[in-house]
Length: 303
Image 1 (cartoon, rainbow, N blue to C red):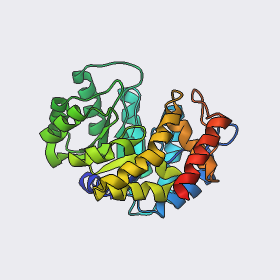
Image 2 (image 1 turned 45 degrees about the horizontal axis):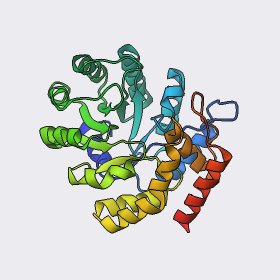
Image 3 (image 1 turned 120 degrees about the horizontal axis):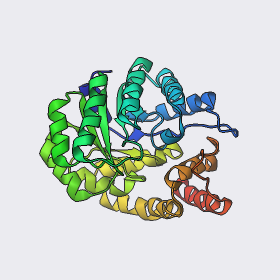
Image 4 (image 1 turned 45 degrees about the vertical axis):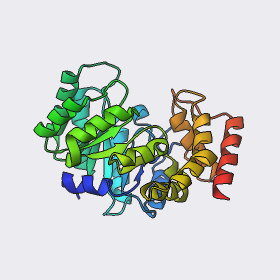
């Protein structure tokens, strides 16, 4: 499934999963538990698995660990489920990660913002072009934080990089997203990528963003798929009910501490009896009181 266009079409056809990365108590990678969880998630209706992504604590993994996680995902997932690997940090590191991901058998790349440094549009474009030139895999740019790509930058990159196949939005700027989508049309696959993407799923669908990254899928896969189906059916009442009953209270807990967008997902895994271990520093786990609040929400959502 390595052909960039076919991977992009597949990703745009359904809900996307961003699995957590399992750690033991000593913070080492727990590959058997990770593979077991991936096999469980792949039994559900999912359009793609993003290994070692943001929810998978990419920022805390070494390059060798990223390679190990990606290889485990490739080995465990069904043949018809695309595995998208991460690339990021400085351009030279991102290029090397892209090459390693291709050797590992990944089906595509999610290109994270360059680490720490701020850059103008010309520099960001050079970063993307270098990664696209280094691999035959389809590349998805992640527009967020210090790498928010302007519409004209994305258009120029789409013209010069045939294997640029996707644009993931982590900003939530509806005007910017409308401009990108209007300018590029169907040239790219568009992915909603906010920390809890369900909050923007319905308005984004109206502008042609057919998929999003669901962190909830990790611990409530059936609920996440029901929510996605309600979005695709434009069931506004159903979406509003689910937002009020679970998603927005969940977001209220998530906002209590920086980094909780990841921590709360691992807490959810613990709540449903599928613990994935602690988060790695500099992240911190939820408090026991917050865990109890989350457990009550999950119980309500699944009862």
